Image 1 (cartoon, rainbow, N blue to C red):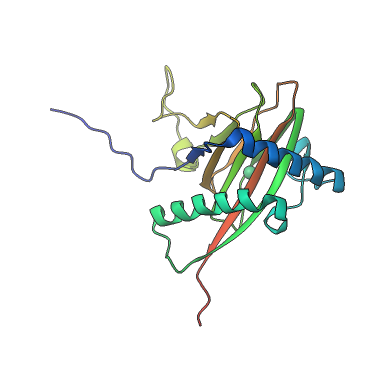
Image 2 (cartoon, helix red, strand yellow):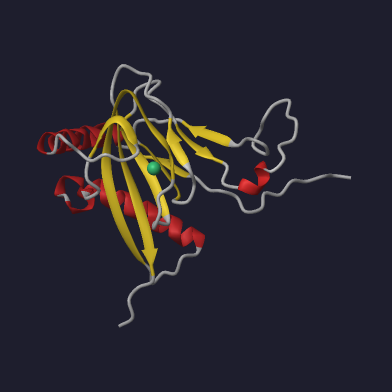
Length: 200
Ligand SMILES: [Fe+2]
């Protein structure tokens, strides 16, 4: 008898790494530093000890290319998930600079369908993004475990890496570990809300 395992209701995290990230990120980095000079106060959000831009990168020309790439990936995901091809993708993005010691508390992104992050500068030990098991009912009575694996883990970390993008369902609770490096972790975060196209 062979016993097989099937994963029902999997929780996806999509990822890719841009081939040209070295040169691409240099340009993004200077665009982010320019924006920080213009808006040194930033906005307060889930980041602790860091700087966050307003969530309007989708309106700023220096970010046109990253915006287009993210949108393309999200549309690919939407297609894979079976979203209607008539849907409109409403996209918002913002930049984060997390100084040494900075972290992001666990949170979700309400009123969105897809969320994610693209790493512009991710030095070693700058803090991984981590996700929490969304299946709250599974926490009702934890079994005694000798070790955890993908069937029993309640938290999963994915490493920050220059040029890598992660996209995940906006309802998936996530946070960022403290930046234990001596340099800034710089990324662009985004939300996509997918709405039915208006009737004509
Ligand atoms: Fe987030």
